[in-house]
Structure formats: C-alpha cells, structure tokens
Length: 174
Figure 1: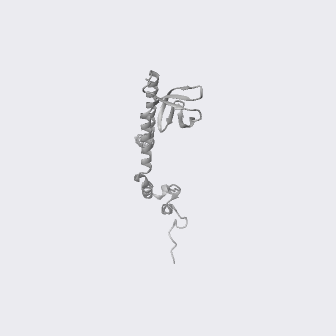
Figure 2: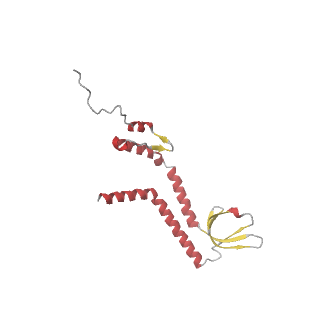
Figure 3: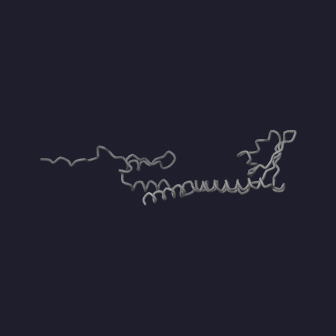
C-alpha cells in the first residue's frame, strides 16, 4: 500500500514538473500529423501561400526541419518547391496557424512562470520546510537558494561541532 502511494505521489510530482511540456509536445505532434494528412489528400491553390526567394536570399527562411520553416514570423509547412532558371526558388507552403499559436502560448506561459511571484518565494518556502526537519537527516546538506547563493544561517544551523558534543557528564568535584 505504501509503495502504491509513494508511486502515485512521485507520478503526481513528475507530472507537475514536466506534464505541461509533454502535453504541448503531444498536441504539436497531433497538429503536424493533421497537416501531413491534409497535404497528402491534396490542397487547393487558394489555401497555399507562394513565397518567392531570389538567389542569395535563402537566409530569409528559418528552416525547422525538411518540410517546416518560419518566414517573416509565421510558421509554414512546405507542400512543394520549384526552381526557376535564374536560381529563384518558389515555395508553395501551407500557413500553420494552429501550431504557431500553440508554440506562442507555450512560450508565453513559460515566460509568465519564470517571472511569477510564486517562483520568487519558492526557495524561502523550501528553507522553512528543511529547517523543521531533524538535524540528523540534514547533517551534511547545503541548500542552494538561488543561482550561486546559499543562506549562511541555514548552513550554520546544520553545523555540528565536535567540541560541543557532550558524550558524558562532567566529573564530580570532591
């Protein structure tokens, strides 16, 4: 029973830490699969955007993989390309608004979480919890509170001096 409870708690903690990232990745994979199916079925020319790239301007496209690129801040899925005699490349691509919106929302949530007031108080909360634990469990621990800083008061609370340990009562005077 304890093992099951421990496993459930670990799963809950793990989902809390990485679950959102996994869900976004799964949604992104589903969106890519849907777009791939739409391309296989066939698209009308009205649905496609034509992007003309002259020779030497290939840097205007930010390729994410073989069939996906960013052009002027928008995400596109490549349907077909053709090259003209002078080296100009014409890409016929499908604007991927859904995946672009998903990524935009994901990055906005990450930025919001990073700047959240709750995140700033997290190290202090951990410190308060750790100070309530018995010293024997924390004998050699040191807690890093924020990038490269530690709390000296907390470290002092963990210090166990050999000189101050009294193992026997003082001798009686005669």
